[in-house]
Structure formats: C-alpha cells, structure tokens
Length: 247
Image (cartoon, rainbow, N blue to C red; front, side, top):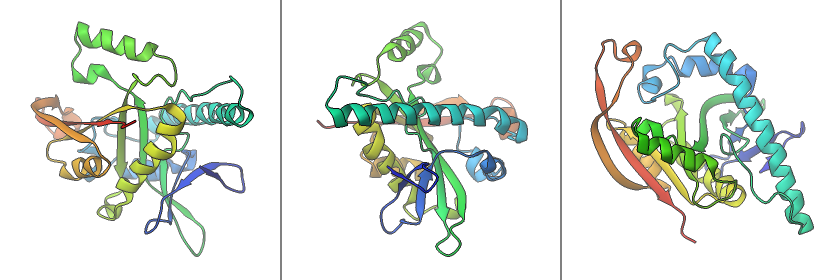
C-alpha cells in the first residue's frame, strides 16, 4: 500500500493496468456510483445495494464507508508500528470492509484525473444470505465473535465494475491485490467466499482466476426485488465459490 501527496492510501495495479488504483471512497464519487448502480448491466448482477439507488442512498452509505476506511487505516498504522518495533501491540486489522481502500479508479495519464469505475470490499461472511435459519444465526454469531486475525474467520468478497471497463483484466487484478496485499498480510484471511448470479459467468471467471473453487449452483436461490425484476416472485440461481489459503 502506498500513500499519495495528501497522505491518502492507495494500491496500484500491476502492468498492464498500472493506470488503475484502489483508494478510499470519496463523497464526490456519488454521481458516478449512482450512475453505475442505475445501470441494469450492473445492478442486475448484485444482490444489494437497493434499487433504485439515488442521492439519499449514497448519503446514507458514504459515512459508513468513510468510517470503516478511517478505522481500518488507523488499525493498519498500529499494526505496522508494532511489527516494526517487534512489540506485542496490535498484530491484525479488524477490517470492517476489508482494506481501507475499496474504490477502483482509472487515472488519466495526462491530467491525473481519477475516474471512479468500480468497487471491491470484504466483510465477515453474511450467513443469513444463505438462509435465515437458527443454524445460520449461530454461525453468524460465532463468526462475528472471532477476534481479528483468527484464521477461522470466514469472509465474503464482493465487487462491481463499470461495463465500459469489462474484459480488461481489471477486476481480476484488483481482487488479487486486495487479497494478497491486504487481506492476507494484515487480516490473516484464510477463508473467503464469493457468490454470483448463475447468468453472470464473468464474475465466476474473476473468482476462478484468483484461485476460488466452485462449490455449487443453487437454483432459484435468490428472489429479485420487484423494483429490479419488474415483477414479483422472480428468482435466480446463485453460484457459490470458496478460496482457501494454502499455508
């Protein structure tokens, strides 16, 4: 992780996507976020956030992203200091949304302008997405109770990218960077899950390129909101992927 002139963190992707960086979210991203999350090529591949998505939704969500990024960055600094000193201080980052950088941007090589083109984040696994059962409630409570750095923590990894930037290897590289530059060295991630709607083969390929193993497709698993599907009761199958760290 590097820092810019304003001491803000970023991760730069390797060649041939060296013009792509991942930074903290910014309030000024709002218009671009709203535009992407209003595009059916994006929102029809996401279980969340809500649709329609407008300024009100962004104004509610951004403070959560901002706080998570600042808190995670503060913890990262503590970890770095403890490791540098060889002390017994904080050793692992909690990572409410994974790394402190979640916004994917393309940097104009001439003007330096940074264009928001997508997002990637990791959260502790949402077991209730797999069904609101007593067993899953127990799994959720147990996973949430594990302390930072526990290798038994199970994580969910989610992402979206502007359709204009598909098929360029950007998301595969971004996922690799987030996992290996932050989730593993600073959160001790060992178990990461991913999911995708069965018709979204592109997302499955991104997971597979990063070492995720296909688990199963569950038909009619998720009921699309009427606001997205245009009708009530429409269900889609969901594919499940799993990444396990080789130690």
